[in-house]
Image (cartoon, rainbow, N blue to C red; front, side, top):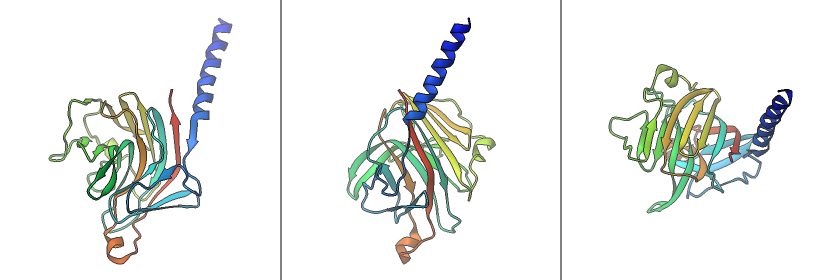
Length: 230
């Protein structure tokens, strides 16, 4: 019995050690893990933070693709009057469109608006809102197999805290996808559209930047990690 307990403990610690060894910090001064596939958008590394600004909707994406993983990051949105929004695209695909290269795919929403859909599941450039459902902009198909949290409750709506650093965690294992905001599970679905792709951090664009060349509509990310799963 004692030997079995020791073996179990060894296995658990081995898995934890493996997970820890696979956990990669994605930010550095040269932002060497990322690239800009768009014709616009600016990313800088300042005091351990990724600082994003853009004139249009934009994702700053990783250079390599990931399949099964745990992604972790903290995000801070600004206190501005104009529209401000962000998100994390994952298992993303690239498409050449008339206006240039773009990323499409799964997205964990960062939504400071009155509807409070942060932590929701959006399909950028394709089926749009999959969880929660939008009256006119939701187009789930046969690849969206299951939603284990169909109701968007008050707890989910209030998981995000505006003007504070918010911790996001995205878990992808096979067709199963989970999104957590500040430790609260906001999305748990089965979807088999994409099995791997890029990860990208979003700035939704600034009208003020277009009009004046300056903006305080800045999105910040910090403590950005990814752990690949076997």
